[in-house]
Length: 219
Image 1 (cartoon, rainbow, N blue to C red):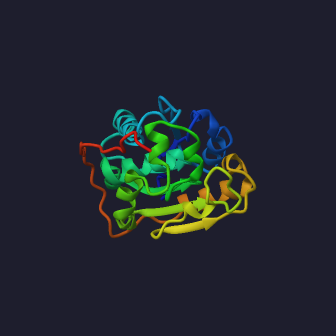
Image 2 (image 1 turned 30 degrees about the horizontal axis):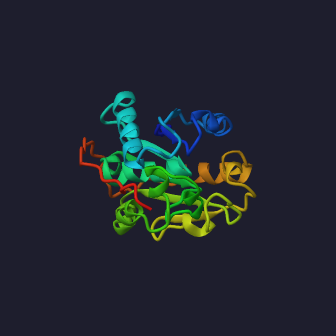
Image 3 (image 1 turned 90 degrees about the vertical axis):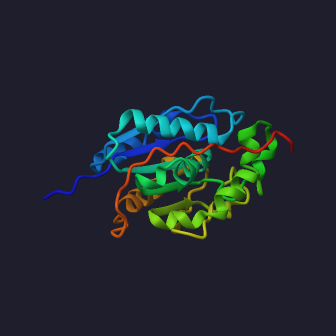
């Protein structure tokens, strides 16, 4: 009997839309996955990432049956947005494979180049990142992978993408944007999606409406 593959939801980064996955979508579809993406609005870093995460939660509730488990991929800023969804908005109870791709998991100095709550939240040692990283161990409940490149000039330092849990995969792609199109990073994404789900974890659907927290606007 052929195993049914979970649908894959792709979440983009700052200044992007779902169209940024123009190469990843057909690549994953060719391998048998059903792929979805959404456009976060606004996408310019002025809105808190916790608020954008609620858009992900709303999209999931509107497009997938309550009993449907998911695979989730977040690129760049989308990696933190999806972490908030998984760690704070109940996503941990329905996501089976979770991948962050070139995400500022420990912040990026580039975020100092722009104001806005979302950008402040992506700075090193921001309140939101400290909150998420304090209980990052919860990601051990699911199959979690962080994929990153040491040559990333948008995630500074590049090893900010590393996580103390799950699996860290380094691909030597030369640019941040190239992580979405390079054959090596696409292969790493497919490999992570093929990782077996945690067998000791029963899928449970929940609607967690925890009150979101966000950094204040002070630098």
